[in-house]
Image (tube, rainbow, N blue to C red; front, side, top):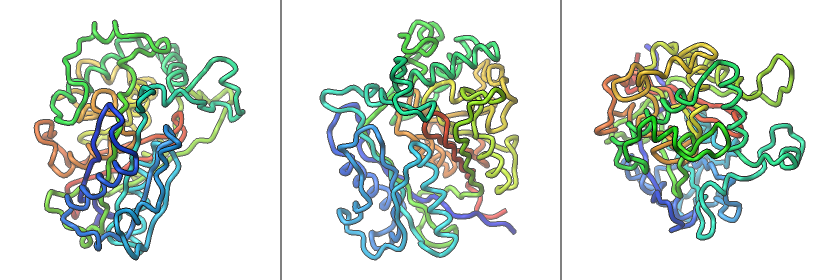
Length: 390
């Protein structure tokens, strides 16, 4: 009989908003309190804290000493992680490992972000230097600022290399919007047609407005506990059966396509191996989708189709409700909300625990949850299941 590594048994949010209403610390505290309550735990039951803080607002630093604000005492495990958006998944991995080795029983993992300020739009928070060469300031001198330009290059390269068209990425955006319409916490729920997508504002050619995530202020937290002990599970649990990471470093060589080759395959291989399954067994996938191109590259990297075949995989509503592989079933970051890695984590948990309401997938035996940081530099994934034993 095989058992999982640990379980996710509670989820909480700090108020999600398109306005600056509260600080990152306030939002994080809200999310932690809600997650502890959701798992039917008390503060005294929490013996570990992991924090993923955002780089979008340096003045809103989220310190490890947040446990003082919440009155946690005698913690045996804690840290602040810095692999950017990959940390949404990495926090859960490190919590699971700590629990498996007896360092903690109930670990709260939290992310908070406030990219939207009174005099700053959400998109402006990401218009910062994003090193593609590891040479400080190199991109800026050529007018390349932030993630949008970098992912525009990746999108253009994918189109040139594999013959994808704008409509290919439109299929991804439309699927996310259809799922968002079933979610009570999604922000973009207005019906969208392919024409709407194609007519949306060009941001960094060929990347359009609806190719981009929808930033919000907010926080999310989950409770990771021992699989047969620790926290309760009054609202259902998602058991962690597989975990993986992949980090590429910078490889600017002739045989390496820096825009479209990612270490997702490294992370996926490790996670599938650990869980004893393959991509064919996955019932639904929560794939990091800060941009539509990352969904395509995620489908390929995690083994759902071959290199360059994502453009064919997504046609005819394959990712949509009723499609052959439900993807980003809460609307993802494109139409749901952009809370970095916590977007996919929260939806993966809800689906695996059978708590997704109107958008609950019919089959949830195996769930893949992915996250990535930087410009596709740091990858991490989880394989979840409602099954406690196998």
